[in-house]
Length: 112
Image (cartoon, rainbow, N blue to C red; front, side, top):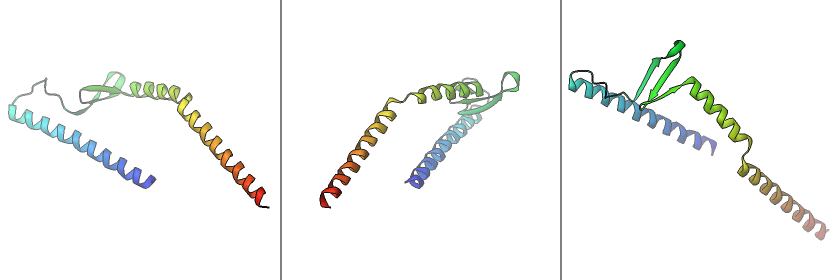
């Protein structure tokens, strides 16, 4: 199951990168046809040097920096600290496991 999920994730990633590459090639082709640089035509994926020699990436016109990624990581860690559904699922699975185990022991004791 994990191998299947890994293959699917790899395939989706390759397809996404293919779409980005295709959009970049289409942008380059449009610039070549036009004959001059038009600032309204932006690339699908660009890397630039930002302030303080920090790398910035622009994906489909939205700028992403390392600081943004760190902030998102901290936000995800806060969200993961309290996951009600995870706790409820764990409690339910423990209850079902304990019930099944006690029923098994009860039936085993009755047969002896």
